[in-house]
Length: 119
Image 1 (cartoon, helix red, strand yellow):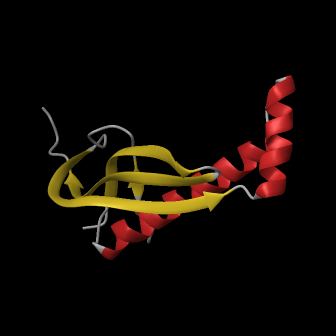
Image 2 (image 1 turned 180 degrees about the vertical axis):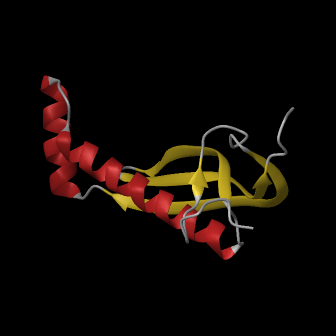
């Protein structure tokens, strides 16, 4: 069943449930992984900026782009499983080499059904 009137729409929440719906089936963990390198020039300029303080826009752009791509990949994974929603969505990032970071977006894919009316 589709959880929304919008075709192709997928609900994503950091919570463990979706208001107005009951979880019909748990489909498993879905994830999107992106590995980014800042590059020597960006890393050097970002390092200089961090010495004097303030927001390092170079890093903000790299991080936001990586998060968005990881999120999109997680959504794609959920759609492949036929999910209506992803619950308990989280981000994680790990630097595994100097200047190289893995960004992970993950959650639990579920199928939903409308909640039974109370009353």
